[in-house]
Figure 1 (cartoon, rainbow, N blue to C red):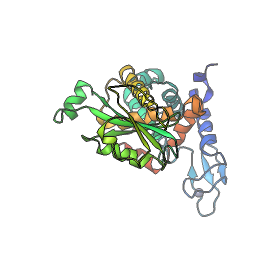
Figure 2 (cartoon, rainbow, N blue to C red):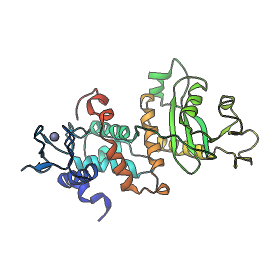
Figure 3 (cartoon, helix red, strand yellow):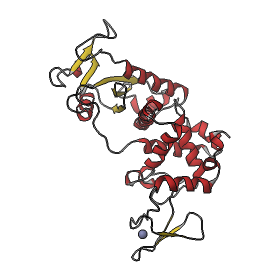
Length: 308
Ligand SMILES: [Zn+2]
């Protein structure tokens, strides 16, 4: 049996049971009053009634998640999350539309919701005393159509900055203004005290860090150099940029500026839950599924368009 024919990817009830185990490791959680492990199963599979005297309300595991108002069966949501989490360069809405046999519109909706779920809400600082974080920025040329719609007046490309812990996590941020102000802000807001910053020799990085905590390499002269703070290079950040750009070319041909942050969240998410850091495809999928809940991700708030 291949992974893709697992029951929770092919059967609605199995998918629901899978999600119940994942979301409720200590028993049912009533979404109305928060009571844990005190609910009766009703005759309808997956429907529970809160046993708390003051509450007594019905619920399912979907309440409060993006799945609640969706007509797409749960096992297709799980499979979509898995496919998006397990392919290195992502999966386009077109591919998903064909693979899951759902409309393109539904597939588009799902991929963007899953990407939202991949944005982690709270961030701990990156780096730490003596640890190296690389920072670098890059540009993307939008498709002609997108360019016309959004960028023609300004005439510049989409830009983003990536902060990459050497051997650790990645954090990318869209830069939507000229200059280095947002890049500097990203570095300031995300690095833990004592972190060593490695960059190219761009002026914008100067004076950002306390003395002795910034090393720059001049790329017009060399790719890397030795220093007291380890080998100075930005290869990890550049490697990440090229992975992202290959993903764009191969998978997401038309990326709109308004969606760039979601695509970055997707690529960051996969990097931050990669095999080397202890996550296999399914563990990564579980993480994404757990992100599909909470107020920040309510269906109505993200989606001003129609239900699918
Ligand atoms: Zn309750």
